[in-house]
Amino acid sequence: YQIRLLIADTPAENKPAINFFTQRIGLTEMVPHVYMSRRVLPEPHASSQVPDQRNLNVSVRMLQVDDLYTVHSLGEKLFEKFPNLIRNWDQHAVMSQFQTDREFSLVAVCGSNSTIAGFA
Picture 1: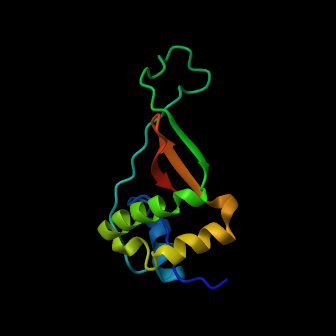
Picture 2: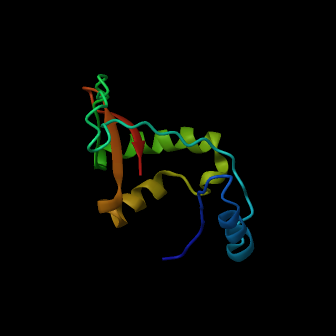
């Protein structure tokens, strides 16, 4: 394998990590982004918490051949807004990932019609 791109993700206040990535690794393009999360299940052993009543109906499954076009289209929309995240996004990149690392190619699907909402 030939490494073409390195990406590091760390909180902006993590100065030691940023110094390491810039000075030791040589990363230079800093891209501001927003990281968001939401706990779907209650904390373990937190009997006083009330579980979220909204049913998100989100699941993660392995990427399938029929998903390739949707994943590529979703990636184009994402990487159009954040071009520094990836430099090589085309149908060949998606197909190559699917063929070489199929067990690590995942999609997040939601809703009763299993709409693809994300990929990894």
